Length: 203
Image 1 (cartoon, rainbow, N blue to C red):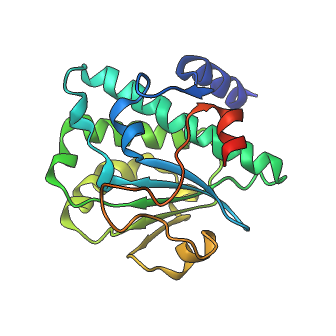
Image 2: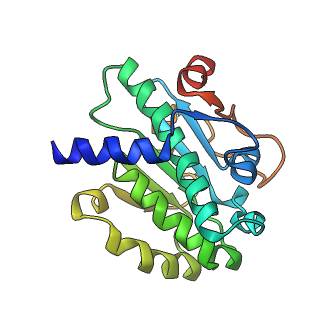
Image 3: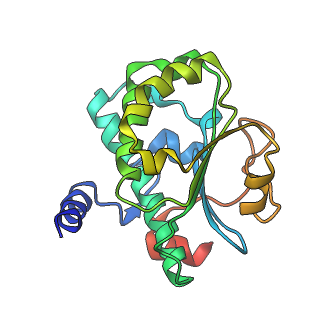
């Protein structure tokens, strides 16, 4: 009961039921940092760190940037959960695939604060697996030292450290490509916007 109440209170603050571009998450949404994919076997959230440039929010305070990113991430979780509920599989949660970007700028305080808030968002939803693709860099090791203490053991046990071409990632995506080959330009698939219901209908 306490957990349900905490989730309701958090959702009321974050308001993740819809996403308008560019107002709610201008840089992240337009760049396609997050996408939701419904494969034959899984619902997958894809996070492309190569497209993530949180420093483009420099006109905002760090807290405003983090709050906008929190809503952006929570909205995509809501879309994923709605797809899973339609399949009768909401209890298992989505699979999450993160493409690690090897860029020093992602060690800036605002980027790390966004990453910490992303972990906080994830705690409100079930998780099937989390694949961290390209996690062998020293920069990732530094960021992971901040994030690892935030994960309980059950969640950590679902984290898979891997590289491009991992067979399990390919499997959850039904053989489709997780990410475009380039860090900009066309996306590998559609982006989500509008209400959660609209995004689900589009996907």
